[in-house]
Figure 1 (tube, rainbow, N blue to C red):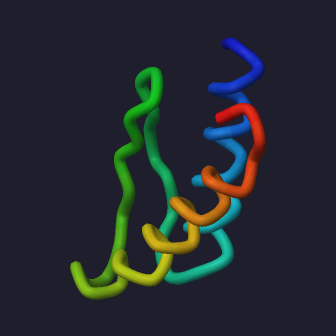
Figure 2 (figure 1 turned 90 degrees about the vertical axis):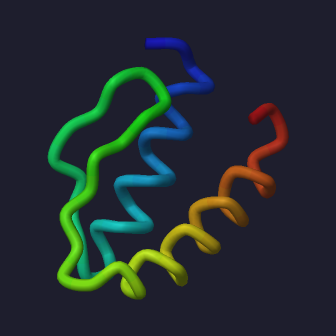
Length: 58
């Protein structure tokens, strides 16, 4: 796995893992998540995007 993909993976797992859902599978830069409600994805997605933007080389 490339260094960039590892960081991206870490950002998404930490963001969703610290909230209401969990990542149950990945494929490259894609993630499959389990959430109780679709609306539960909004805040974590925003946080994951902010984390990716804050990482200089992503």
